[in-house]
Amino acid sequence: MSNCPPMTFEGISAAQYAILLQTAQSQGLNLTGESGSTSYQGMDFTWNYDQANQTLAIQCTGKPIFIPCSMIEAKVRSVVG
Image (tube, rainbow, N blue to C red):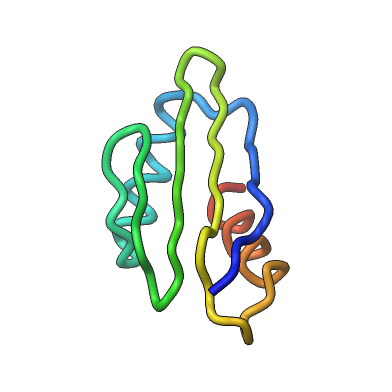
């Protein structure tokens, strides 16, 4: 298992974050609250939402060696927008 670089998204309002949580949950990710960690399809993720600064940080902290970080980042970016 290996880590990917953290991703930070700016300009995420509380309303946008609530929609992102709903979208993630509908796709099988167990995300609740403003920070935490979860596992999804053999990968581990951490996230932290800072409402005051409207930033969302996401990092894949564990993944199979055969899945490149670029693929994970592309998928996360497509969901976060």
